[in-house]
Image (cartoon, rainbow, N blue to C red; front, side, top):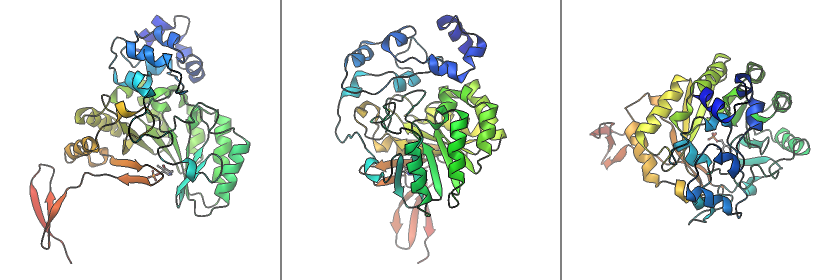
Length: 370
Ligand SMILES: *Cc1c(COP(=O)(O)O)cnc(C)c1O
C-alpha cells in the first residue's frame, strides 16, 4: 500500500528514500497546499486553515498519510491529524494547560507531580502533531526546551532529588532526536544512582516506524531497564512497518506498553479498541492506559462522556486476554494527577456480603471478612 502511495505522490522518491526516517521527516505534510496534493479537504478542514488564533503546528509523515484513505473525510487517522474548524472553539471546562503541568515545573523541562517519578521534556518536536495534544500549548513552538542548558537544569534537578526513581523522557517525541544526542541524555540519566527505571514516550512506531533502526534499538537496549511507552490510536496503525519495528524492539528485549486516548468518531467503540488492544498484545506491547481525552482548548469534538470509556472496558472484561485491557484514566484538571475511573464491578453490599457483577452481568455474593 505504501509503495503505491509513494509512486503516486512522491514519484521521485526511491523505496530506499521511503525507508529513511530523515526523508520521511523532511517530506512531512506541513501546509494546506501540501495536504491538498493528497487529500480533498472538506469545507470545515479548509476553514480551519483560515483561522490563525491557534498556532498549533501541522505535520504528517508521508508514511502515516499512506495509512489514511484520502477519499474519506472520516478516516480515523485523518480525524486526529488534519485540523478542523472546531479546534478553534473554546469549550466548557477547557484549558491551555489542562494538567496544570506549568505549576509543577520546578526546573525547566521537568514536571514533578508525583513523589518518585518525573517527566523530562527532551524536545518539543514531533513527527506528527495530534490535534488533541495535551501539550498543544508548547509542542513545535521552541518553548518547551532549548536543549543543552535546559537539559543540564533538568539533570541537575533529578540528581539533587534522591526520591526520583523513575524518569519518563517525553516531549515532543524523544525518538526524533539523533541517536548520539539521545544516547548522551540517557547516559547522563543512567549515571544518577537513584534513577532505577527509564521510560520513553513516543508515537514513532505508529507514525514513523522507519525510525526504529537496528542501531537505535541496540543503543536503547544498553540503557536497560528502559521501557517504551507507545502512543497508539487505532488498529489501522498496526501496519507491517509498525509490526517490524515492534518485533525489532521486543527481540532486543525492550519492554513496551501502550497509551491510547479515547476519541469520539475515531476509536470510541468496543470492536475497534478490541482489535487495537489484541493487535498490540500480538506485537508484544501491553495495553497500559486508555485516557479520557484531556480538556485542552478546542478538543470538545474529540471528547466522549466518561460513561463511554467505562462501557467499553466493561464490554472487554472477560471477553479478551486480561492484559489486553488497559486501565481507564482521567488526568484531573489543575494538577491532581491521574485517577483510574473504572468501571467498578462491585454493585454494592448486602450486610457482610459484597455484590459482584461478573463479565456476563450476573450478580455473585462474596462474604467480605470484617
Ligand atoms: C502520567 C504521568 C507520569 C507517569 O505516571 P504512571 O502512572 O506511572 O505511568 C508521571 N508524571 C506525570 C506528571 C504524569 O502526568
